Image 1 (cartoon, helix red, strand yellow):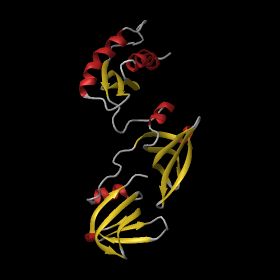
Image 2 (cartoon, one colour):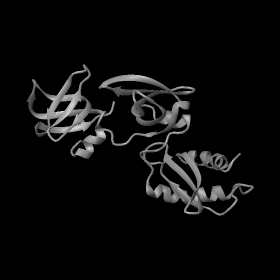
Image 3 (cartoon, rainbow, N blue to C red):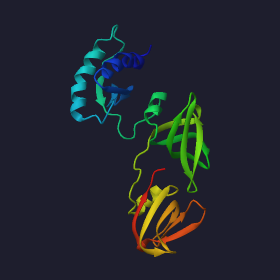
Image 4 (tube, rainbow, N blue to C red):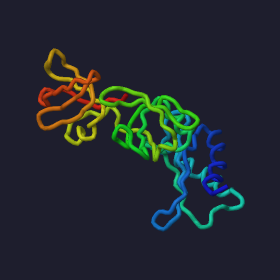
Length: 226
């Protein structure tokens, strides 16, 4: 059993008994110093800074109590939260993320892209099922774990689009736009943002129709999750 496995085996049950979840353990070099990083969350709700401060002593005591000592040299202990963009590595991580939006970096591209953001619908023995948008249409995709280079929780869902930077980020994603006045009989538009410039946004709706929405007519625009 390597160092990370030993630390996980020691910490996981002790933290679970106190209502905490051991998300991950990392043991790596940082600025020529070894760092043991434990990523911990609450099983229910969000972990606080006060929680992390209290857990630092507990984690330190538990790790120091591992016999025989598995560490070949001194190290710095870091007790932290996994964060909003936490990595998904184990099947249990994906099970925790069910019903949420995740970002996947694929080893080979699908529909011309090696990255996709989708809603995690189901975990399988050897992979996952996600729902994601392609040309403003939702479709389900089964991805094996072998096809995934990396995965993490998606951030900035339902982001308001104000600047060109926001729009560039939202390109090829689903957006929702509300206008001050009716355009072609409607004031709300939804679809994939395929292009934009200083004058307009270009959106393709679920029916495949291309819509041009003048930017000076937009009351509110946001990227929306699936």
